[in-house]
Amino acid sequence: MNADRASRYAPLLLRVLLGSLFIAHLYWKFAILPGGLSRWWAGFATNGYSPFVPWYVFSAELAGALLLIPGVYTRWVSLYVLPMMLGATQFWAVRKGFYFTSAGAELPLVWSLLLVLQMMLGDGPYRLRAS
Image 1 (tube, rainbow, N blue to C red):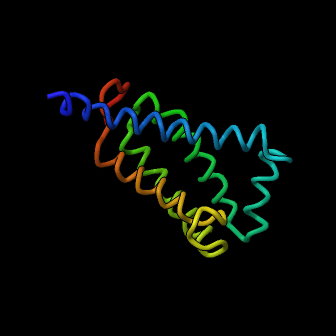
Image 2 (tube, one colour):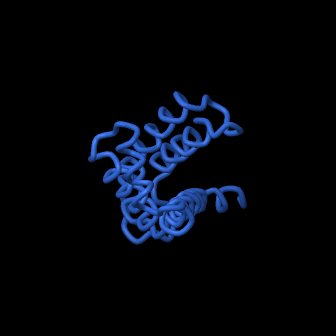
């Protein structure tokens, strides 16, 4: 069946999608955001977060960007990144509401569900290291 052959590539497609989105977010922090990474980092202190939080968020985005696309411990990386996305969901839900049209929590919630789906599907084909 063609559907069976095509469906086995779903984890690969999801890995590439998530990894590419993390690359885009890192690029934004370094190249597009006025003030760059230091301004982004200072935003956590301004909002009252512990100094641990920006370290974790940056490491989670970096792990997502570098490890998801090639398929290195995909399930573990997805599990490591998930609390960051749940935290982003809570952060934006409190401040802006749910809908993405007002920069709300809808998009981080979708990311969270995609990470859970990646954990359930596993590495997929063309991976460097199985979970």
